[in-house]
Image (cartoon, rainbow, N blue to C red; front, side):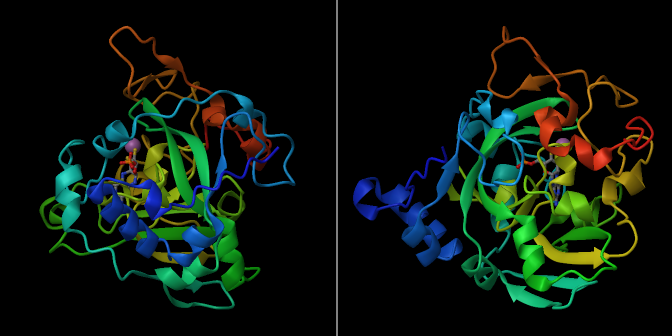
Length: 317
Ligand SMILES: Nc1nc2c(c(=O)[nH]1)N[C@H]1C(S)=C(S)[C@@H](COP(=O)(O)O)O[C@H]1N2
Ligand SMILES: [Mo]
Protein backbone atom coordinates (compact mmCIF):
# COMPACT_ATOMS: atom_id res chain seq x y z
CA UNK A 1 0.00 0.00 0.00
CA UNK A 2 2.85 2.40 -0.56
CA UNK A 3 1.25 5.36 -2.19
CA UNK A 4 3.69 6.96 -4.52
CA UNK A 5 2.46 10.48 -4.66
CA UNK A 6 4.25 12.13 -7.49
CA UNK A 7 5.24 15.20 -5.62
CA UNK A 8 7.53 16.41 -8.32
CA UNK A 9 7.09 20.10 -8.52
CA UNK A 10 5.86 21.36 -11.83
CA UNK A 11 6.49 24.99 -12.46
CA UNK A 12 3.14 25.16 -14.23
CA UNK A 13 1.37 24.45 -10.96
CA UNK A 14 2.87 27.46 -9.37
CA UNK A 15 1.54 30.91 -9.86
CA UNK A 16 3.10 32.95 -7.10
CA UNK A 17 6.52 34.15 -8.32
CA UNK A 18 7.97 34.03 -4.83
CA UNK A 19 6.98 30.40 -4.44
CA UNK A 20 8.34 29.74 -7.89
CA UNK A 21 11.68 31.18 -6.84
CA UNK A 22 11.72 29.09 -3.68
CA UNK A 23 10.95 25.98 -5.66
CA UNK A 24 13.75 26.73 -8.08
CA UNK A 25 16.09 26.95 -5.12
CA UNK A 26 15.03 23.57 -3.78
CA UNK A 27 15.31 22.00 -7.14
CA UNK A 28 18.86 23.24 -7.25
CA UNK A 29 19.63 22.35 -3.66
CA UNK A 30 18.11 18.90 -3.88
CA UNK A 31 20.07 17.98 -6.98
CA UNK A 32 17.35 18.94 -9.40
CA UNK A 33 16.97 16.08 -11.78
CA UNK A 34 16.46 13.72 -8.90
CA UNK A 35 13.54 15.59 -7.46
CA UNK A 36 12.00 16.52 -10.74
CA UNK A 37 12.55 13.22 -12.44
CA UNK A 38 11.52 10.75 -9.81
CA UNK A 39 9.29 12.77 -7.59
CA UNK A 40 9.23 12.39 -3.86
CA UNK A 41 7.56 9.34 -2.44
CA UNK A 42 5.45 10.28 0.48
CA UNK A 43 4.81 8.04 3.45
CA UNK A 44 1.76 9.19 5.33
CA UNK A 45 -0.14 7.94 8.29
CA UNK A 46 -2.00 4.81 7.31
CA UNK A 47 0.41 3.77 4.61
CA UNK A 48 3.15 1.22 4.67
CA UNK A 49 6.69 2.27 5.44
CA UNK A 50 9.27 2.42 2.66
CA UNK A 51 11.44 -0.17 4.36
CA UNK A 52 10.10 -3.62 3.67
CA UNK A 53 12.03 -5.87 6.02
CA UNK A 54 10.49 -4.45 9.16
CA UNK A 55 7.32 -5.80 10.74
CA UNK A 56 4.21 -3.87 9.80
CA UNK A 57 4.91 -0.37 10.90
CA UNK A 58 2.13 0.03 13.40
CA UNK A 59 3.30 3.48 14.31
CA UNK A 60 2.68 4.74 10.81
CA UNK A 61 -0.93 3.65 10.97
CA UNK A 62 -1.65 5.97 13.86
CA UNK A 63 -3.00 9.21 12.54
CA UNK A 64 -0.36 11.88 12.74
CA UNK A 65 -1.47 15.39 12.14
CA UNK A 66 1.31 17.45 10.72
CA UNK A 67 2.26 20.60 12.62
CA UNK A 68 1.90 23.84 10.68
CA UNK A 69 5.01 24.71 8.70
CA UNK A 70 4.94 28.27 10.03
CA UNK A 71 5.31 27.03 13.59
CA UNK A 72 8.08 24.57 12.77
CA UNK A 73 10.04 27.23 10.89
CA UNK A 74 9.68 29.85 13.60
CA UNK A 75 10.26 27.86 16.76
CA UNK A 76 13.74 26.41 16.45
CA UNK A 77 16.63 25.55 18.69
CA UNK A 78 19.90 26.61 17.07
CA UNK A 79 22.31 27.55 19.81
CA UNK A 80 25.11 28.54 17.45
CA UNK A 81 22.96 31.57 16.58
CA UNK A 82 20.80 32.32 19.59
CA UNK A 83 19.12 30.84 22.62
CA UNK A 84 15.83 32.33 21.50
CA UNK A 85 13.52 30.09 19.48
CA UNK A 86 12.07 32.89 17.38
CA UNK A 87 15.28 34.76 16.50
CA UNK A 88 17.04 31.86 14.80
CA UNK A 89 14.64 32.23 11.88
CA UNK A 90 16.33 35.46 10.83
CA UNK A 91 19.80 35.01 12.32
CA UNK A 92 20.45 31.68 10.61
CA UNK A 93 19.88 33.21 7.18
CA UNK A 94 23.51 34.34 7.18
CA UNK A 95 24.70 30.74 6.92
CA UNK A 96 26.00 29.96 3.42
CA UNK A 97 24.77 26.49 2.51
CA UNK A 98 25.68 26.15 -1.14
CA UNK A 99 28.17 24.73 -2.03
CA UNK A 100 28.44 22.30 0.89
CA UNK A 101 30.61 19.29 1.45
CA UNK A 102 30.78 16.61 4.08
CA UNK A 103 33.89 14.85 5.26
CA UNK A 104 33.34 11.15 5.93
CA UNK A 105 36.22 9.51 7.74
CA UNK A 106 37.35 6.96 10.27
CA UNK A 107 36.49 3.29 10.07
CA UNK A 108 35.40 3.25 6.42
CA UNK A 109 36.80 1.82 3.24
CA UNK A 110 36.11 4.96 1.26
CA UNK A 111 36.85 8.05 3.35
CA UNK A 112 36.70 11.38 1.60
CA UNK A 113 35.25 14.82 1.28
CA UNK A 114 32.00 14.51 -0.62
CA UNK A 115 30.04 17.29 -2.26
CA UNK A 116 26.45 17.31 -1.08
CA UNK A 117 25.25 17.30 -4.68
CA UNK A 118 27.20 14.13 -5.37
CA UNK A 119 25.76 12.48 -2.27
CA UNK A 120 22.24 13.45 -3.29
CA UNK A 121 22.66 12.22 -6.82
CA UNK A 122 23.02 8.71 -5.40
CA UNK A 123 20.08 8.86 -3.01
CA UNK A 124 16.38 8.76 -3.61
CA UNK A 125 14.55 11.33 -1.62
CA UNK A 126 11.32 10.51 0.15
CA UNK A 127 8.99 12.27 2.50
CA UNK A 128 8.91 10.86 6.03
CA UNK A 129 6.30 12.12 8.46
CA UNK A 130 7.71 11.74 11.95
CA UNK A 131 6.94 12.82 15.47
CA UNK A 132 9.71 14.99 16.93
CA UNK A 133 10.11 15.42 20.69
CA UNK A 134 12.41 17.98 22.27
CA UNK A 135 13.91 17.21 25.68
CA UNK A 136 12.25 20.47 26.86
CA UNK A 137 8.89 18.63 26.60
CA UNK A 138 7.37 20.15 23.48
CA UNK A 139 6.66 18.18 20.35
CA UNK A 140 5.67 18.44 16.73
CA UNK A 141 5.01 16.29 13.65
CA UNK A 142 7.20 17.13 10.67
CA UNK A 143 7.11 15.92 7.06
CA UNK A 144 10.84 15.66 6.41
CA UNK A 145 12.38 15.03 3.00
CA UNK A 146 15.50 12.95 3.07
CA UNK A 147 17.01 9.50 2.88
CA UNK A 148 18.12 6.90 5.42
CA UNK A 149 21.55 7.58 6.90
CA UNK A 150 22.23 3.87 6.34
CA UNK A 151 22.10 4.28 2.59
CA UNK A 152 24.82 6.94 2.72
CA UNK A 153 26.96 4.91 5.13
CA UNK A 154 26.70 1.86 2.87
CA UNK A 155 28.22 3.84 0.00
CA UNK A 156 31.41 4.50 2.01
CA UNK A 157 31.62 0.89 3.22
CA UNK A 158 31.96 0.83 7.02
CA UNK A 159 34.76 -1.42 8.31
CA UNK A 160 34.20 -3.95 11.09
CA UNK A 161 35.79 -1.52 13.55
CA UNK A 162 32.94 0.95 13.08
CA UNK A 163 30.95 0.87 16.33
CA UNK A 164 29.76 4.46 16.64
CA UNK A 165 29.06 7.37 14.33
CA UNK A 166 29.96 10.92 15.29
CA UNK A 167 28.47 13.98 13.57
CA UNK A 168 29.82 17.52 13.67
CA UNK A 169 28.15 20.83 12.83
CA UNK A 170 29.93 23.57 10.93
CA UNK A 171 32.35 25.59 13.03
CA UNK A 172 32.57 29.18 11.89
CA UNK A 173 32.46 31.77 14.68
CA UNK A 174 32.34 34.57 12.10
CA UNK A 175 28.95 33.32 10.98
CA UNK A 176 27.67 31.66 14.14
CA UNK A 177 27.91 34.32 16.84
CA UNK A 178 27.36 32.07 19.87
CA UNK A 179 30.39 30.01 18.88
CA UNK A 180 32.48 33.01 19.91
CA UNK A 181 30.28 34.49 22.65
CA UNK A 182 28.97 31.52 24.52
CA UNK A 183 31.24 29.13 26.31
CA UNK A 184 28.49 27.14 28.00
CA UNK A 185 28.56 24.58 25.23
CA UNK A 186 31.73 23.33 23.62
CA UNK A 187 31.80 24.12 19.90
CA UNK A 188 31.42 22.76 17.35
CA UNK A 189 28.20 20.92 18.22
CA UNK A 190 28.84 17.17 18.14
CA UNK A 191 26.37 14.32 18.29
CA UNK A 192 26.65 10.58 17.98
CA UNK A 193 24.85 7.29 17.54
CA UNK A 194 25.72 3.70 18.07
CA UNK A 195 26.27 1.95 14.74
CA UNK A 196 23.02 -0.08 14.91
CA UNK A 197 21.07 3.11 15.66
CA UNK A 198 22.77 4.83 12.74
CA UNK A 199 21.90 1.96 10.41
CA UNK A 200 18.26 1.80 11.52
CA UNK A 201 15.89 2.62 8.66
CA UNK A 202 14.04 5.27 10.70
CA UNK A 203 17.26 7.31 11.05
CA UNK A 204 17.36 9.97 8.36
CA UNK A 205 19.50 12.59 6.85
CA UNK A 206 17.05 15.34 5.96
CA UNK A 207 17.53 17.92 3.23
CA UNK A 208 13.99 19.27 3.15
CA UNK A 209 10.66 19.57 4.86
CA UNK A 210 7.10 20.49 3.87
CA UNK A 211 7.90 19.83 0.22
CA UNK A 212 10.69 22.42 0.20
CA UNK A 213 14.39 22.54 0.89
CA UNK A 214 15.31 22.69 4.56
CA UNK A 215 15.13 26.21 5.99
CA UNK A 216 18.47 27.37 7.34
CA UNK A 217 17.10 27.66 10.87
CA UNK A 218 16.00 24.02 10.70
CA UNK A 219 19.47 22.76 9.82
CA UNK A 220 20.12 23.30 6.12
CA UNK A 221 21.54 21.95 4.05
CA UNK A 222 21.76 18.56 5.78
CA UNK A 223 20.69 17.44 9.25
CA UNK A 224 20.14 14.26 11.16
CA UNK A 225 16.63 13.14 12.22
CA UNK A 226 16.34 10.38 14.83
CA UNK A 227 12.64 10.31 15.70
CA UNK A 228 12.77 8.09 18.80
CA UNK A 229 15.37 10.27 20.54
CA UNK A 230 15.17 13.73 22.08
CA UNK A 231 15.59 16.48 19.53
CA UNK A 232 19.11 17.51 20.54
CA UNK A 233 20.42 14.31 18.93
CA UNK A 234 19.13 15.54 15.55
CA UNK A 235 22.16 17.67 14.74
CA UNK A 236 21.97 20.44 12.14
CA UNK A 237 24.28 21.66 9.36
CA UNK A 238 26.48 18.56 9.35
CA UNK A 239 29.99 18.92 7.90
CA UNK A 240 31.62 15.79 9.26
CA UNK A 241 30.59 12.18 9.77
CA UNK A 242 33.15 9.95 11.48
CA UNK A 243 32.89 6.24 12.07
CA UNK A 244 34.60 5.38 15.33
CA UNK A 245 35.46 2.31 17.32
CA UNK A 246 34.68 4.13 20.58
CA UNK A 247 31.69 6.20 21.73
CA UNK A 248 31.39 9.73 20.44
CA UNK A 249 31.82 12.51 23.00
CA UNK A 250 28.68 14.51 22.42
CA UNK A 251 28.13 18.16 23.26
CA UNK A 252 25.16 17.98 25.65
CA UNK A 253 26.35 14.82 27.31
CA UNK A 254 29.70 16.46 28.00
CA UNK A 255 28.11 19.64 29.31
CA UNK A 256 25.71 17.95 31.73
CA UNK A 257 26.03 14.17 31.80
CA UNK A 258 23.44 13.79 34.56
CA UNK A 259 20.84 15.66 32.47
CA UNK A 260 21.50 14.60 28.89
CA UNK A 261 22.48 11.00 28.35
CA UNK A 262 24.26 9.68 25.29
CA UNK A 263 21.22 7.61 24.29
CA UNK A 264 18.57 10.27 24.94
CA UNK A 265 15.78 7.88 24.00
CA UNK A 266 12.39 9.46 24.59
CA UNK A 267 11.10 7.86 27.78
CA UNK A 268 8.12 9.06 29.85
CA UNK A 269 9.39 7.14 32.89
CA UNK A 270 12.83 8.71 33.08
CA UNK A 271 12.40 12.33 34.17
CA UNK A 272 14.92 15.01 33.42
CA UNK A 273 16.39 15.98 36.85
CA UNK A 274 14.48 19.27 36.67
CA UNK A 275 11.19 18.30 34.99
CA UNK A 276 8.95 15.37 34.11
CA UNK A 277 9.11 13.76 30.68
CA UNK A 278 5.74 12.14 31.15
CA UNK A 279 3.81 14.51 28.90
CA UNK A 280 4.50 17.09 26.24
CA UNK A 281 3.07 20.31 24.83
CA UNK A 282 2.22 19.88 21.17
CA UNK A 283 3.19 22.86 19.02
CA UNK A 284 0.08 24.31 17.48
CA UNK A 285 -2.23 23.46 20.33
CA UNK A 286 -4.39 26.07 22.00
CA UNK A 287 -4.59 26.91 25.67
CA UNK A 288 -7.26 24.21 25.96
CA UNK A 289 -5.41 21.44 24.11
CA UNK A 290 -4.48 18.78 26.64
CA UNK A 291 -0.82 17.82 26.88
CA UNK A 292 0.07 14.69 24.97
CA UNK A 293 1.08 11.62 26.94
CA UNK A 294 4.70 10.96 25.98
CA UNK A 295 5.32 7.51 24.54
CA UNK A 296 8.33 5.27 25.08
CA UNK A 297 10.73 5.77 22.17
CA UNK A 298 8.40 8.58 21.07
CA UNK A 299 5.92 6.00 19.76
CA UNK A 300 8.49 4.07 17.71
CA UNK A 301 8.98 1.23 20.21
CA UNK A 302 7.81 -1.44 17.78
CA UNK A 303 10.58 -0.42 15.42
CA UNK A 304 13.44 0.31 17.81
CA UNK A 305 12.94 -1.34 21.23
CA UNK A 306 14.88 -4.39 20.06
CA UNK A 307 18.00 -2.25 19.71
CA UNK A 308 18.06 -1.90 23.47
CA UNK A 309 17.24 -5.50 24.46
CA UNK A 310 17.95 -5.95 28.13
CA UNK A 311 19.57 -2.56 28.62
CA UNK A 312 18.47 -0.73 31.76
CA UNK A 313 16.90 2.38 30.20
CA UNK A 314 17.12 4.26 33.50
CA UNK A 315 20.83 3.77 33.68
CA UNK A 316 21.49 4.25 29.95
CA UNK A 317 19.17 7.23 29.49
N1 LIG B 1 23.98 22.20 15.41
C1 LIG B 1 22.88 22.18 16.17
N2 LIG B 1 22.00 21.18 16.01
C2 LIG B 1 20.87 21.14 16.78
C3 LIG B 1 20.64 22.13 17.76
C4 LIG B 1 21.59 23.18 17.88
O1 LIG B 1 21.45 24.09 18.70
N3 LIG B 1 22.69 23.17 17.06
N4 LIG B 1 19.52 22.06 18.57
C5 LIG B 1 18.97 20.71 18.77
C6 LIG B 1 17.72 20.72 19.50
S1 LIG B 1 17.81 20.99 21.16
C7 LIG B 1 16.53 20.43 18.91
S2 LIG B 1 15.10 20.29 19.80
C8 LIG B 1 16.44 20.32 17.45
C9 LIG B 1 15.45 21.35 16.96
O2 LIG B 1 15.21 21.22 15.60
P1 LIG B 1 14.33 22.37 14.91
O3 LIG B 1 14.91 23.67 15.34
O4 LIG B 1 14.40 22.12 13.46
O5 LIG B 1 12.95 22.22 15.47
O6 LIG B 1 17.67 20.53 16.78
C10 LIG B 1 18.80 20.00 17.45
N5 LIG B 1 19.98 20.15 16.61
MO1 LIG C 1 15.75 20.22 22.03
